[in-house]
Image 1 (tube, helix red, strand yellow):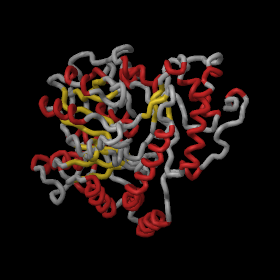
Image 2: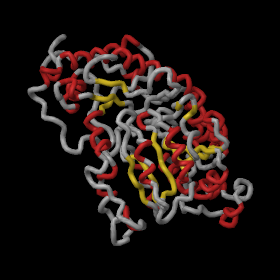
Image 3: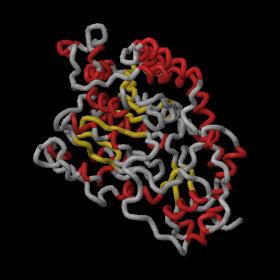
Amino acid sequence: MSTLALLGGPPAVTSEHEDMFHWPIVTSEDEQAVLEVLRKGSMSSWDITMEFEREFAAWQGAKYALAHSTGTGAIHAALYGCHVGVGDEVLCPTITYWASALPCYSLGATPVFVESHPETFCIDPTDIEHRITPRTKALVVVHLYGYPCDMDPIMEIARRRGVKVIEDVSHAQGSLYHGRKCGMLGDVGAMSLMTGKSLAIGEAGILVTDDREIYDRALAFGHYERYDDAHIETNYLQPGAGLPLGGYKYRMHQMSSAVGRVQLRHYDERRAEIDRAMNYFWDALEGQPGLRAHRPPAGSGTTMGGWYAAQGEYVSEELEGLSVTRFTEALRAEGCPWCGAGGNKPLHLHPLLNTTDVYGHGKPTRIANAGRDLRQPAGSLPMSEAIAARTFGIPWFKHYQPEVIDDYVGAFKKVIANYRDLLPGDPGNPEGLGNWHLSRL
């Protein structure tokens, strides 16, 4: 193959192929839905939002859905719905977006981080049970980068130990675990629907559950307009009606819910095309040294949904120790601008989880309400701390166009074929590789 672009040769990808990566797909149908809300002046009402909730619940296969202004708000409400409060511990993965864990703080609880699985990069079921204590109230699982967690062993442990399970589905709308839709495997599912997600409707989030008490508590927590006798069935919540129990205002803006109704109607078709394109990409790279597809085994009934923030697994030793930093630098030069090294940094190493006093307790917030020092220093979660050197971003194709995808496959093959030319200038991976949040989060 020709000289690598990073070393002066021509790039493998010479066109930007903007249509392949533009998201979300917005048509006149979306525009008309938004205009109707604007012309009615009903941006802050909730009639259209409740229609979206009903449609989303039906699509999800849930009894209840509750729309929120953000995915962070939906996770916050899910925690409250599961009775998380002062002094409680919540098990969470450390490799995730911060919103999976940090809402614990404002409830007086603290996150306890769990090791990552070496293949899925999701929470490792084998590292959960020994971290459960009498203070453990809930477990947050994240279907990271669209790859579903191994939910059967997780649910067996949670049921046996009396721990509620919250699914963060922000990366995995429409993903299946052994044929079952993510979000309906635990006690409650919560997710972001912001503009960058695979189901993208604006700055928004949603909660789904079959548990009426969890739903009612979430409604009471941040939806004061709907917190009344007509909407709340849980008796002990009724005396507080009229004001949000959490002091939060979490309703979804109705331009988002209007767009959501349209996007949901087309999502399964669009998601299926993304799935076809992404699998075509990985199939074309099967057997290439240094790479592993980050996807479930074919025929398992487990799928990647819309492949949000899709990653590849990098195997440095197959390329004579070439760092993922140098490898992705070469890919970007070949015309793959999304191919960055590393993913999310481990949350347990951030100062906010170690030294920061958010609320003036006079001690780090992480331990302010805990009965013991729960902080987890560097080296305590070695698999999670090593993941950044084994992951990198890949192109997120929105359409099945093999002739275009082949250009990007060619870029990957070119870099791999010429990897020895990159070894002399390899600076290695920097300390703290990755980001506290991905650019597409």
